[in-house]
Image (cartoon, rainbow, N blue to C red; front, side):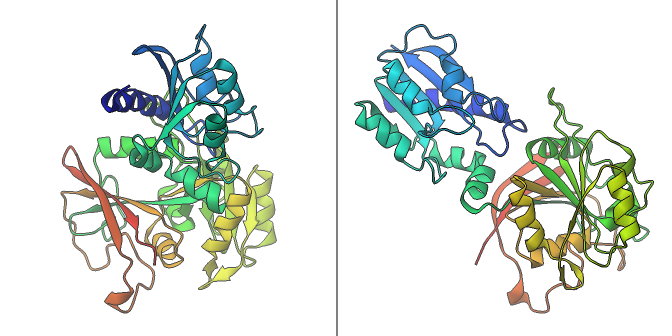
Length: 367
């Protein structure tokens, strides 16, 4: 089969894999297409965590896969997990060729699935659309190799760098389509994190109001060092999403008991710069199988997250408005850095126009 066909069928598998957004975490997004004599016999994707893998779903309505080619975005697994090894099924079905998008970074797989297929006499080729597939699975790649959640910072500001007026009014900086995209992000990531000041000022629900049919409300995380969240806040009185509070020992026992009575979970964290130690918090979240965190905090939490080095990716929405005001907040508050050479640098991946807004997607350059 020529390279253009390989790319075409892998592209189809890639698009199928996106259907798993918000449903498979902390597993990867995987799509698969079965082709014989240039025709698609079956296709599928990993639909939900703990469910059949993409290869198995693609085989559901295939009567005879002997001598067919499988296109799969991620290396087939060779170990028992929530499901049996996919490699064994592919060997049993007598595929003649398997085309893999990217090698699985999971240490339990990481090339061993490919090796087992080759040992069984199956032709294996890999690396088709690898860069695109790797970016799509950036959450999985970090979490499976480090156990630490992939952390995303979302900001929205005016052209002169303000996230609100000097009186605190912020509705709305970005346009409606930009806000719709933010709800798509809430659907994709496992948790959403804000600081207590955002809860007090905006009283948000922090739920998934995307256009996806299978709504998936993220775990709501409130960073509240001293336990100042009002007990009538929406995140405490709405039960459609789970809520976790990250506090320090400065939070009163009465406050902790009250929010636990409302069904919330609590992690007591050590202090760092008189605030919650966010590195400690990320480690604790990772142990709870939280693979990704979207930070929609205010300027204080945003700077703490940047300063502690937990951010991997940044979505920056810029609106063609100007507010001015010396006391109007910017996306990063806190103390700030004293020297320009201390600045956090970013690698801009993409700039997109959303009606009149600009969206800059970038990655923190780790030293």
